[in-house]
Length: 147
Image (cartoon, rainbow, N blue to C red; front, side, top):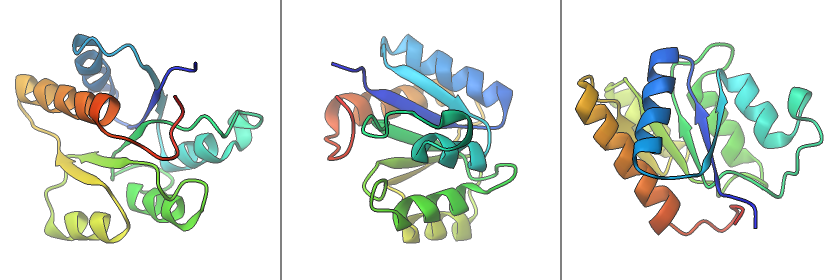
């Protein structure tokens, strides 16, 4: 059986490293696929560009999506995911530093399953990511996810 994957869409190298570290400290052994902008995220999910030929039946268990991304924003990624029948039910957790009410409302309007503001303090950040990982990978049931 293929291992359940996490898709991390994050352009900040420090936040990427902290997120991976927090998930690993949770003893979650899931593969973490990292992409660094919105276009790369869609390429991965739809098997385009460098990901052409990827088995699209093996979708991530959860997508951790930053909003402020280069080339294509997280909101635009979310909009395209929800518009396509192949990805509209994938769990998407917006994991961002934005606490703007407009970003929160728009994320939920576009179909985000959760909105989590990245804590600034290191230990709070690690705790938040660990809790996200445990919930979305061990407790949540996803209808389209591999595994």
